[in-house]
Amino acid sequence: MKILLNGISGYMGREVAKLCNAGYRGTELSVGVDPSAVGDEAPAVYTSLNEVTDTSGVDCIVDFSHHAVTEALTSFAVSRRLPLVVATTGHTEEELQMIREAAKCVPVFHSGNMSLGIALLVELAKITALALPEAEIEIIEKHHNRKIDAPSGTALMLANSIRDIRPEATYNLGRSGHGKRAPEEIGIHSIRMGNIVGEHEVIIGTPNQTITLKHEAHDRALFAEGALAAAAFLVSCPPGMYDMQSLISSEDGAESDFSAVIG
Image: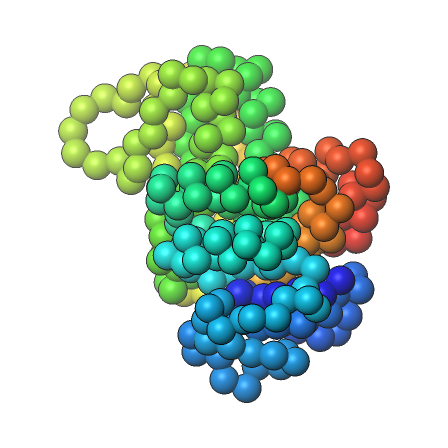
């Protein structure tokens, strides 16, 4: 499977490139794109998607760049009928709509986090929130000091999944000021320091008990592996929107394939 890697020079782009060049899951780095791409290990490297004229050797696009390029990225994928894995976070609502529109034409995999562990955390949080309908919920996320968006895409993914079963829920981002906590609130708190790869904690509490669910990422390679597993899953899918839940619950063997990512 040949990959066009958008954002090849970034932290995560370099991790994906390393895995592709090692033949991880049968992947091969075909094209790299990044505004600062210099000397990256790919057969063809460009500073812009506009420079890529030949995609005959590409099976899937993996994006680890910046949400600001969403319009160019989705237009590129649609015009060339290429599956697209969007592993970037921080999208505006307008950019998310662009992704949804692209999914009408090509298969698009979009997730706020490319970890199977996080996908399991999402499901556990939903189960717990459903079982304890009166419980108060807080989410704490920690990342390195270079991360731009806050809250993280993963924190919002967790909150959104809980709001699926609690439609009245509202978000309180970085609580401050005066006033009591509203019963329907989900508090979301962001910490940025050092070189923390990623930690997400969901605290679900009633007056008599508290359940804490936590996931820690120890190495960024985890997300690179997940993105390539998503690409392998996506290339056989029809147009539509897909995510980690789609992958782990698929009936076409992707579930067993994905076990290799954490095995």
